[in-house]
Length: 191
Image (cartoon, rainbow, N blue to C red; front, side, top):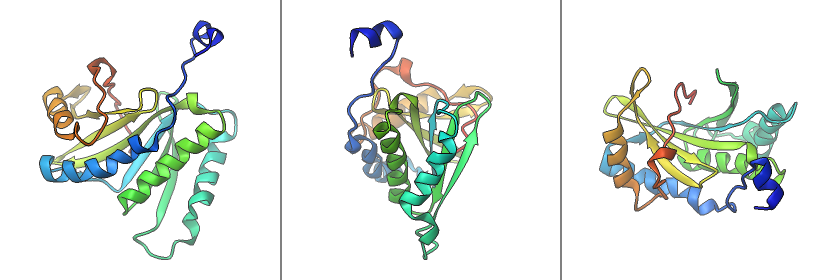
């Protein structure tokens, strides 16, 4: 990080390491067998507001890049949706039956933003799982390049004990964020 970046409060993202985000593919199997969690058929990526018109262009680029319109098998088809949440953050949601395809789509979106110099807008990728009658989210923070679990347990409440248990279950497969202060709650996740 340069002197000017530190004065202006800018941070640089760690070098893109696709192995870290793709670790979720292996961790998914561990979470299924050891924690009783099943991945849902959607994932999301959240970012700060992009330059004017870029959000719509990002969606169009993602659809074109993945060739979503040309998929012939229902199992292979992916759907992309844009959402702006109550706090003004922009979400790109990808839905489909193949977990690895969802993972690749999210990675492609992030890589596209990084390649265009918009990496500082990237905040997190969110992977929802379901089990024991509730939704559990695994969140990949782009700034730290680490994962952490988020388990909501009611209105603005979270199950910290379950989060710690899930982190212990997945620590062999995922780079779990060691600083618990960085395990941010994402209330009202549209994924």
